[in-house]
Image (cartoon, rainbow, N blue to C red):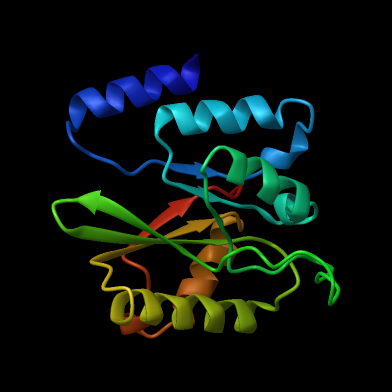
Length: 172
């Protein structure tokens, strides 16, 4: 009910807007995951930014998201990469068509298998790719990292490689 109310209010304030970002940890409530995914789809969520906890069971989460036409994204690989016959890794980004010709690139960073330098390189490379190859006017980074780590991560990036908007999900 809380999320539905927030979405209803947001849509009233921004008629015609299409982008809603949902931050991860979806897999924590395994018994409620199908219901949560269904609700997110009904709310019109375009991109689900995944946390490292979500990636621990990506095969199951991926199936549930696909059943509801939801896409997930995370630049952080799971702690244990899938084996050669295992499921594909989560997509590194999602492009959301925001109407009026706008394309928004969404990527998510979480605590996981990459060192801060590697994570910074991944964010920079994906931000450049979204702008150049996907023609995204805006790139959004959803950070599940603590605020100080997010600041350090962004401080490592050249100005041109930084996302345009940061959604800080991690604790302070």
